[in-house]
Image (tube, rainbow, N blue to C red; front, side):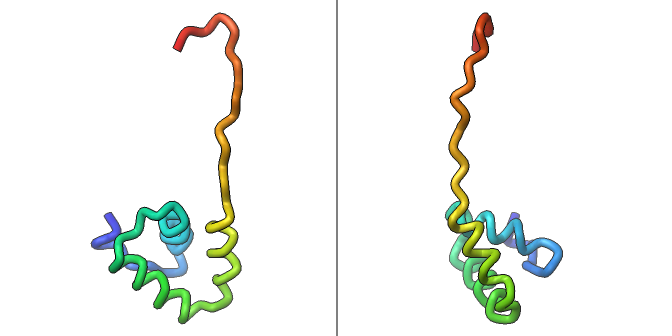
Amino acid sequence: MRDTMKIDLNNYEAFFLDFAEGRLDNSSTLEMLAFLRNHPELKAELENFSNLRIEPLDEKFPGRIF
């Protein structure tokens, strides 16, 4: 998917999330870092993605069989 998609101001969040989750290949990572050098104001936003941790909820559903 990332092979044909180029990072820009309309889709950088998807790249940041994929980077934070370790899903970017080397080429896409280099492209994202080059984009970040051209848009240093987004560095804090990337750091927020990198610090994001989502824990699953431990919800109970009485009477429900999964």
